[in-house]
Length: 384
Image (cartoon, rainbow, N blue to C red; front, side):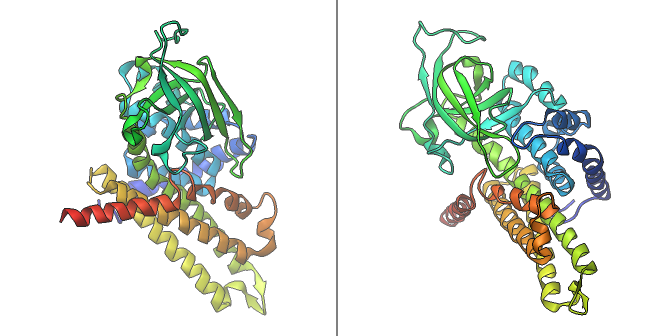
C-alpha cells in the first residue's frame, strides 16, 4: 500500500464508520450538553470497539477513524480523539500497573482521559510551562498510592475534558531553568487532593477547562516515562495526533463540500442553477482540489509515522497545517455559497463554522507548525 491510495477494505471501513456515526452516534451527540463531557456518547464509542482501536491501530487507521467520524458527527470524533490524546502517554510510557488500571476503562468508555499540557503563559511555547513539581517535604500528606515525592503547584488552562476527566496526563517542571529538558509527565487521578478545576465558556462545543494544583501530591509511581524527559512524551504524542487533527479537518471540509455540491446543484438563481455560474463552479472546484490535497498529505504523514520515517515531525506539522487551513477555507467558502441560511443556528455549516476554527490553534498553532517545518528543513540542509 502506498500513501496515496487506500485498500478496498479500508474504504469499506470508512463507509461503515460514517454510517455508524450518522445512525448511532449522532442521536447521542444531539442529546449532550455543550461544554460538558457526553459520557453516553463516549460509552457508545467504547461499545463499538472504536476506543479500543486507539491502542491497537497505527496512525493511518487513526486518521481514517477521525475523518470518517468527523464527516457525520464532529462530537463523536472529538470525544474519541480526546480519549486517545489523554491516554496515549499512558499506553506508550506507562508502567504495567498504570496501564492495567486505566487503559481498559478508557477503551470501554467508563473513564475520561485528558491531556494537560497548555498553560495561560505557555500555550504554543510548551517548553516554557511553569507548573511546578517541587520536592515534597517529609511531613507532606502522602498520596493514595504511596509517599509523595513531589507536590504540583500552579495552573493549567484550555484543557479539553477538564474539569470532568477521571485522570489527567500532566506535564510539570521538575528542574527549574532547564527548558524542555526539565519537564516530567505525571498520571494524576482527578480525585487527588488539591486538584480543582472549572469549565471555560469557549467557542468549541466540547468541554474545555482550567485546572488548579495546590500542592497536589504525586509519587514516583505516577511518573510517565522518565523524570525530566516528559517533553519527549508530549512531543511523541503530538507527532502521532497532529496528522489526525488534519484528518478531523478533512472530514469537516468534505462534509462542507458535499453540502455545497447539493445546494448549488438544486438552488435556482439568475435563470438557472447556482452551479451554472462559472464563478460558483470554480469555487467548488477549488474546494474539492484543496480538500483532496489535504487528505493526501494527511495520509502520507500518517504512513510515514507508521513506517518509522525520520522526518515525522516535519510531515506531521505539514499535514496539520495544510489540512486545518484548508478546512477553514472550505467551510468559509461553503457558508458564502449557501448565504444567510448557513448562519442559522442548527445548520450543518453553522456548526462546522464554529468547529473548524479551533484546530488551527490547538496541538500547536499554525505559526508553530510553520516554525517546526522551517527548523526541520534547515536541520536537514545543515546535515548535508
